[in-house]
Length: 175
Image (cartoon, rainbow, N blue to C red; front, side):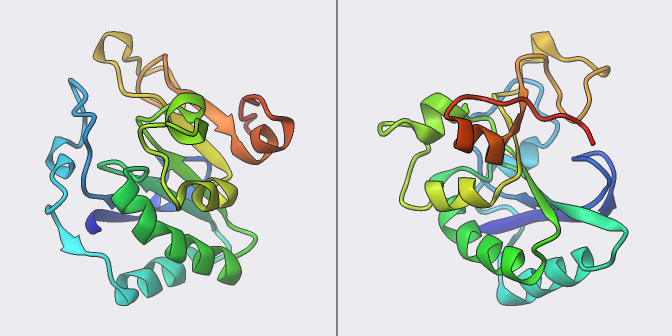
């Protein structure tokens, strides 16, 4: 997996001040995507232990609420395989920090379904560690600057822990 960009002290991609990791590689290729350069899986630099260390240290201060995963597409299977061990380490070292993940995949059909397009051996582990999932492809015709933490009206903010416990989608409530 490659890293397209890291934003420290980001306030646009989740609640509170966050560290945001933009991974490379996306097969959605949404019309009007804000980060088209990150569609290429080879864009950026390879994810490494050094980068993982920097992300954890950047998120450690009390004023940082958590980590956001964006792309590209974090839930591309090849990216899930690289992100899962990092998220396990992140959660072990910073259990009070939340994790948001932005994906163009849809939770029920692409990630949870046995034949889902993005389902792989790492998916259940990834989903268990994510607190808020913003799902759905960006749809230019549904773009709105009035939406919080998403680009188009079809995208959902999902309280993933509550959703997995309930067995049906629970919308994220701002706190």
